[in-house]
Image (cartoon, rainbow, N blue to C red; front, side, top):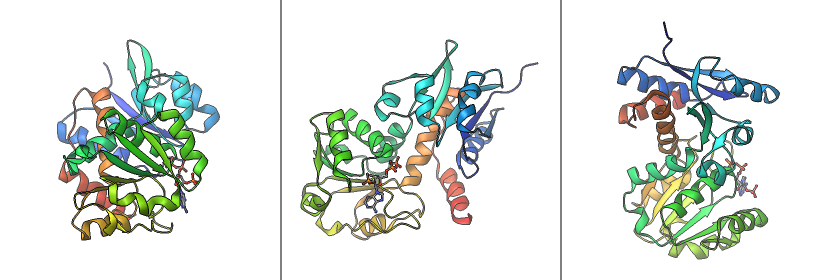
Amino acid sequence: MSRPPAACLIGWPAAHSRSPLIHRYWLRTLGIEGGYVIEAVPPDEFKDFIFRLSLRGFVGANVTIPHKEQALALTKPDARARAVGAANTLWFADGELCSTNTDVEGFINNLDACADDWSRYDEALVLGAGGASRAVLFGLLDRGIKRIHLANRTAARAQGLADEFGARVVPAAWDAIGDLLPRTGLLVNTTSLGMKGQPPLEIDVALLPHEAVVADLVYVPLETPLLAAARARGLKTADGLGMLLHQAVRGFELWFGRRPEVTAELRALVEADLTNS
Ligand code: ATR
């Protein structure tokens, strides 16, 4: 008798992830017999763990901190995972362990869902030059945006990403943000500013064009000061929780064979969990 398919989240620590809530909701509502569990795996055991993933009974996995770079190196990554420099979703194809980075489509699909006209703007301004910024840059370039201004507190990191991603990414000084806002059709915060316990992101959204779209990857709190200010001005916004939900879609589809939907009910479920924790 074969066991129902199961996937897992591999992290260290991994206890606070919302992924089980999301995937179990989809399993339940789609009537699929399957499982999704958390596996706390220390870094020196990660390699052995994923080499025996199938033997352990898993059809695939999500990977989170601190394993995402190791996951890239130990699997067959797609272009997205390579460009981001980190893998967060693993699955088997023809017996091989493959990987991708679903933050790219999580960001883009959430943007499409929240502001379907965002891609008509020529210029974007992305704040931050860490791992999350790489996923955003890849997604925006892939969708054909003409120019991305990239501002980061540490200028050398923005320059490094511009060198890597090509001429459509233009590094900008952190104190030049105010000057860039009037020509910014899409503003994306990938820094930790605005996150609970961190200082707010000091941006004057009044300087943005009337039709600008504002995205924030931070999801604790759900509404960052940046998003609150943008909404108060009547601008379209895309939040970090939306991206988190949309990035989970592809993994589920790869493991369980059905493409799930990001519904209002799922969002409410995860919102309630975030609010109560
Ligand atoms: P992630 O992988 O989530 O992107 P990260 O690599 O730690 O995380 O990047 C965090 C981003 O937030 C960086 O762009 C960081 O700027 P630096 O490269 O200068 O460190 C940015 N950041 C964090 N705290 C900040 C602050 N107080 N002011 C401005 N930027 C900040």
